[in-house]
Structure formats: C-alpha cells, structure tokens
Image (cartoon, rainbow, N blue to C red; front, side):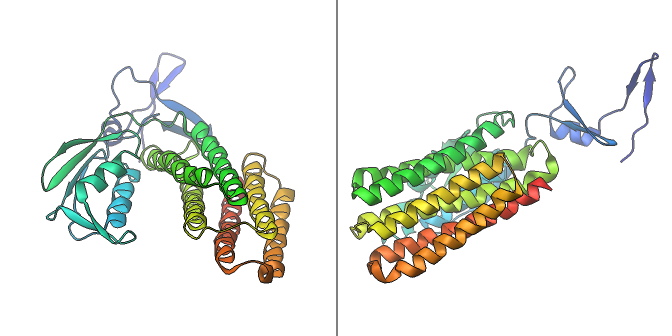
Length: 313
C-alpha cells in the first residue's frame, strides 16, 4: 500500500489514512492517533481496538467445561457481540457427574470476563455484548499485577499445604478466578489492539497463556490437598518453596533481563528436579502426585524463559 505525500505550506507534509483501516477503527475528525518511529517506519496506532463484530455458535451437546472454554475463546478473540444457541436446557458436568443448566454455566463464565454482559436471554439462546471500550493503556500495569498475584497464589498454596489449613487452600480457587479474569482480558486486548511493539504481540499472548496454565495447576493442587487430606512433609515443602522461588526468579528476569539470570533459572531447575528424585522414597504416594504436578511448573517456567529470550532479541 502506497500513499503520496501532500505538501502544506513550507513545513507540513501529510499522507492519508487507508479508508478501510480508518472505518474498522472508527477514526473520526479530531481523533488523536499514536505515532512512533521505528527506523525508516512510522507506526500509526490507536489506543482502542476495532469493532470485531458478531459471531453465532450452537453449543448443543457440549459439556460444562467445553462451553466455558468456548466462551472464553470467543471473548479473547475480541468479539463484541456473541449469540450462543442451545437446543437442550441442560449440559453435563463431567467432573461432578451431574447435569447443570446451560444458562447457569454461561452466566457464571461471563461473570469472570471483564467488559461483557449478557444482553438478552431466552429459553434456547442468549446474547452477550461488550459494554466497555477496550484500550491498551493499562496493559503493562495489568501484566505486572498478574505476575504479583500469581506469586501470591503460590505463597497461599504452600502456606495452606504446610499448615494443613483448608481455609487458606480454598482461597486459591478465588485467586485463580481473579487472575484468569485479568489474563483473559489482557489476551483480548492483544488480539483487538496489539502490543505497543506489534511484532511481540504473539509472544506476550503466549506468556499469558502459560501463566494461565500454571494457575490451573495451582488450583488443581489445592483441590488435591483438600480432597486427599495430604499432610506436608519437610521434603515436599522444600520442593514447593523452591518451585515458587523459580517463578519469582522468572518474574525478575522478565523485567530485568540478563543472560546470567537465564543461567541461574536453568541451574535451579535441575537442582529442584534432582531434589525431588532423591527424596521421592521419603514422600507418601498422594503427596508425591501433588509434587509431580508442581514439577510441571518448572517446565512451564522454562517455556516462559524461552519466550522472554525471544522478546529480548
């Protein structure tokens, strides 16, 4: 796409915006746009995303979890108007081995998503619409908050595990839902508006997806400790604290990148893996299953580290 430069007086030069792009982003006379220099390029951007439009999906036959994942995916993709149809009023909750109302599942999931509400609801469909303007302004603040809350979640999980405190363990679910809401909205912003350095949008989206998976593991471990009444061993506590420390090391790497910190993360990863191997005979079977799940966090942090290296270069 090429544009001719228009000369106005002696000092002002203008080029026109592509009409299709301006319409998609609802650009009007008097609006302010961001312009940044990247070598021989000028990047023109808005702070809000385009109106993505409508989507209609029939969820008949899906189970509760699949409905939740579908709604979250549509939301992350940036749709502003979602019509969800269903021919049956009930769906299967596989984990709980029971039937649930489809409308209850939709209402619960939408309550976890920022900036959208159920606009209308009938017996066999509901319409979900965006009620807020999506802006990228607060993205970096939100990302840092996600890191901090995830670290807090690990602290609460380990404290509840070590002390056998069910009340603390039960807060992990609530903390998970809070952070997932932030993660989903951040990913929606990346899809609709894009990161300030647009080329890095996909990598940061990937970082958020991994953090969301790590949070799921924390939630499942809290449930497992509660359900199986697992008592923490000194060895298990030490391993969990080392994994928590590994996440905090990555948090520091993300904002203060050095190759020395990459090396430190990798060295600590092998230290924790070796520690678990050496102590597994001292740990009860149920507790060992929890620690095996926690060990997966190390691999996800390795994935995060690789993503951060890619962001740097």
